[in-house]
Length: 403
Image (tube, rainbow, N blue to C red):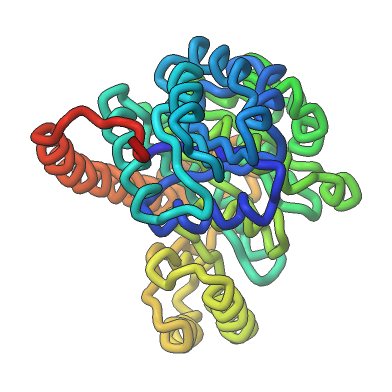
């Protein structure tokens, strides 16, 4: 999967480019309002992207000297120019600046798709990381969403595969996911990072994270609803676009809030884990959450039902819940108040304080299933991409689309 960054002065056109790119294939997309000079002060953050799309009204707006410097500094970056004028002089100037494709506006979806497929073949050759994104969300407080998200993230990072895992606490109430698996004070929080997005490079982002283990990092939440409200959507989008490619798994703790920020995370999620309890209030609220997610365009196939704090007395409510949602429980986590409370009081993962408990074993199973499914998907995609690469290899070397 390739990571695309699109620049334009027109937010409506950015939205259209994102929509057409989504129809062309399974790509991760980041939007930024402005021109190429916007990237000049953001250090090595451009290394996170495989494709740069520049939407410009003219060659002057395309800032060719800036693009040329960016292309030289980031050699594997594929640059695509969208411009109304595709005269021979424009094509030559664009090629000299480092643009590989020049496409006319309005966009032809087929031409855009061909350009992105060529970029994807180059991205595969350079070993682009295939990041899996998961969101944990609930419809009621006290469901245990943060506890599950934090402990599953730790469990994935602890598996023999040594996957790099980032947990982002996007719970906009009183975010405390970091304190569920560590007793350290976070060096920074999500609002603080977003407020300094101009400084966003690999080093700055790394120093803003809590390093629970070598390959498990946490970006702490606001911990204050007022500060959470200060997070700007475009800044969060940029941060996600830069950070995600450096990890194998990115997990979001969304709590029970659905707004523009949480939808940004959901838009990027391969799986949405809906955390509920086997009780009649959760049946009604869970159905409403499911209806909202489906109305927002999230597929039922993305959703996973996680039953937390389950007891044998909840069988009737579980049956009703699964019937109403039309989903079987993906994972059942048993009730064990003593083991959970002890882990939370110590600020440690439950796998360290009560490794043999039913809670720890269930969370371990959930983590293993997530990694196993991701590995299977990677194998399927690799086979498909290999076939595409073979077919592409029979064709002539790609040229500018309009030549």
